[in-house]
Length: 168
Image (tube, rainbow, N blue to C red; front, top):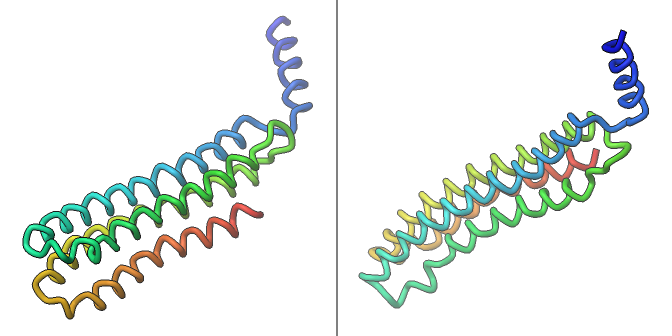
């Protein structure tokens, strides 16, 4: 008898609250995923490109400032994740937050986070090899920049999809 009374009270409490804990969990996981994965990509891209810039700076110190572009581009990837994390985090409500919204926010966080991780890895690898090659052959600079732009576009695609999905 006591168990059924407790279950009945819990059921009525849950029925009065249109926001499930599951929805909020997925919303917050979306915000965390956006920031964590995109910052992992940004950190990897920055570190890998920075190693290339340091190695290149030993041979051609006058090209260091010109070769810092991959490091800056990798840092921008983290900003994409921050934007979505803030948008998702500020839209999570204690009441009226549906499962659909929670799943949408989770999906948008994964979209920008994982595309940012991929973009950061691409920028790091291309940046490292590109700045070393540019030190030996300056004509490769434009080609390196074009490849970096295409790698950065991967993160931008994730940001665009995340903005669309999170606004649903």
